[in-house]
Image (cartoon, rainbow, N blue to C red; front, side, top):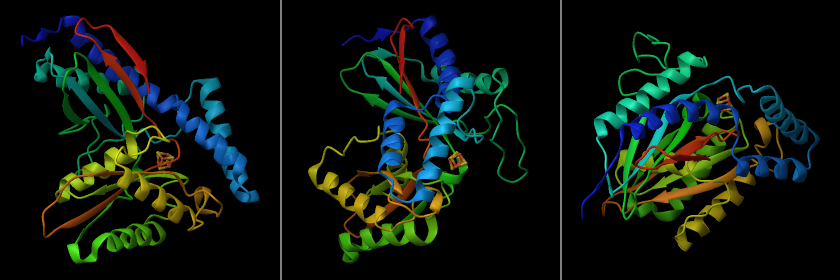
Length: 300
Ligand code: SF4
């Protein structure tokens, strides 16, 4: 099968969209997140919980009406790039365009650059540096588009990331115990609840963490894992985490988790890995789909 060559306009569109999606994600909350926050507010029974949720809804309204960021933390920029296998794409040019777009968003908007080197804490003031923005690639079968999903990952939620290499004898019970104990004892109110809990199960240590990240940040709220066994596990953990009563901003209430999403992989016979990654209440993301000629559609 001959591949479809992409034009110069395609790479220009990738750069512009990598810029625009960063700003959009910071300002314009996806509809599914707006709906679940409003619904959570309406169902909350505690006075404190209602006050906290009302403040969050006010925050969203102000960001909308004044064209402001929803939260001051511009996060670590993460891009998930899916490339259709029918396209002939130069990955070096593609990556250059994504990085340039990310840098331009920061300089031209301007945004706070939240990215520093690990030891000297040097800030390039453009949200980029060695290996950042984080760019994750996937190839999609029978597809002739490129999809870019942009997620600004806030530090409060990213700092609440945990991995445990359980042994198989600990089974599913051990997985459940680790999740509930970690949320109750370590995560708690730190990542601005109510939050999305992403859980990775199986794979290798690094894959398990990545699965937890994908579960936390890429899925619209309300979408279930297509595997019935995993969907049932999501439901069980969703109810159990909300029964902990941590509540909005940790001040008590009905909702701690807006959603619990699980992504899984097969693993080694002697391993039983489980990972947690959290996305805070403004579950920010923005997406675009680009054709070979640079035409595009923007969404969430
Ligand atoms: S955890 Fe999320 S809501 Fe809280 S400060 Fe960080 S980015 Fe903002």
